[in-house]
Image (cartoon, rainbow, N blue to C red; front, side, top):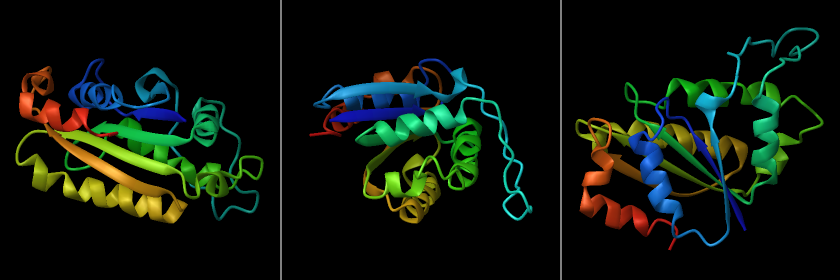
Length: 177
């Protein structure tokens, strides 16, 4: 089994990424990380209704989608930014509209049934305020036919806080058990 982690954190060693690292410590299989902040992914230009469809964009998006297709399971890790996913994650997922129209990828068919997970982390009343983000991922996964297995909402207000919450670390350590 292989797990691909797609991190939307804009900060190295951010709290959401830290919790994902703790969660995958119990994963039985190969783990590969893609940190979106380390890749060039252009904003989408919506050309769905143009006569010629989407123009090719020379960036890292297609290569990351190909890694998703190869993986057995996918974990999306993103901080909670303004009650939603990070900009890095949103831009990446927005571009799926283009990937869906790339016949050589068979993107939607390849994602069908693929076990998928979400880990997010935020501050103020995060157990409540992160629920719209979880619902957004649920809708995305349903559209793609992906199997939404599990999510984890962590609490952290400033860099490094996730590492200092023993109860939270115990819960996330069991994420893949």
